[in-house]
Length: 528
Image (cartoon, rainbow, N blue to C red; front, side, top):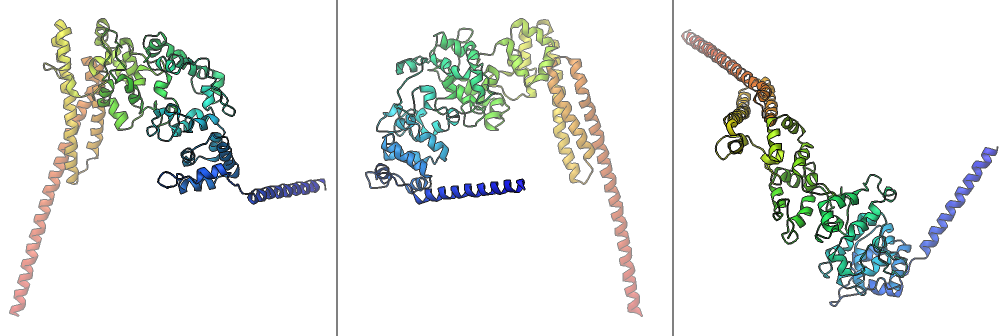
């Protein structure tokens, strides 16, 4: 009985609540929003040619907004934070969802700095900064898509002040008071960004996986030391790579530090002789500024920039991110080993390892280069004058030069022989297939040959003839086996062809006999 009474009470309460909601909705619909005079004036403004400043799409978007959002527009106009029809047009053209629109309309900083009546070009947000001669970072659309804005860290989060009040410009203590000083000497930027990004507890509220040691790493980097020690105010700092108002998460394709965009971001400085003027490398010579152009031609650059392979290495994979530094000789090979592990392990056990260490040569870079790494080819093993191996052996191998050259020639001839065989047997199998023969056994062996060729090409990094021969041996044996299979297939084809010729001859003889018999029968019929 009590359960039934309880259910009845819950049902009655539900009906009452539903009725209240219904009445509230009815009341809201019965009291439509009426735009105040100032807002109506902006909505109906025309330009010098008599054309409406705010088009039909903008007006339709406004009319589709809930009443409380429309009221926020009215309040912003009444308080003169929105003071121009063009400003209102830009805000409406963004077609923001209601929650984001409310965040914008209650941020007096943003409204004031998008109002051309209050701001000069350097501090005016617009949808087309170039048209109003504002800096590129004063793009309103970029600002609203900034990763900080999406986490509700708006203007005051960096600039200080109260965005809901009188917006007093209470810049943080890290900021130099003078604007020109802030721009000319940006050493304050890393510490300023680090006040949040070095706070583990704070960052855990937004992205617990985000590292909080970036500032410490930056201080140890070549960029950080050059900037913070006062040697180069042009050295890269946080905003140089991440931007200002349009900062995106690193995994966003729109981010300036997204893997495919990193080379261009680094090249923005390192490809500009003016920015890099006065910067020197270890030997005291001026730092080159063609790295980006070289990278674009490299096997890594083409993989990343042309084919979109985000696993291909970019600048930061070799030089680091926040702790960016020139790759030291001792670390180059370790960097390459992150991808080319087997080749590195083979080199570690080779005779070349000792020679490279004695001469202070970077292991992989010595033969393959750095920024302009080209696709490897078997021609690298040639021993003619002017070739990579020959010239190095002539200069450094001394009395062992002849032996070294002979080993390189053996590597070259063996690998080229297998490479040519893979091409030849591919053409042969296609021909056999067209003649209706079973090529599956040959194809299986051809795949084995491909694998042996890859293994042999890698094995040369051991620079040991006996080890190389052991790896290449299955490939040589496979070539012999393929020749036997092709010969057997040709014999099979010959037998089939001979059989067909015999069968065709028998059929022709039978046909002739039958024809003669029919002619004889026809003659007998005519005589009778």
